Image (cartoon, rainbow, N blue to C red; front, side, top):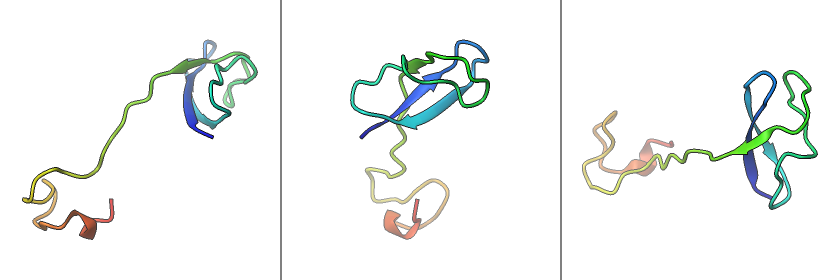
Length: 69
């Protein structure tokens, strides 16, 4: 099951939920305020690694597996 991100129409809060594929939020409630039918939103993606051999900008290692990100 994928993790989807939702935005509440009542309080504007965002939350994530492990849902069946295709869940649109129609059967959910906001965990913060209880308003029904939050809207599913696009989540951003962060890779955490790099494609070069010079290491991350926060460390001097050339081996990204040593960072444990």
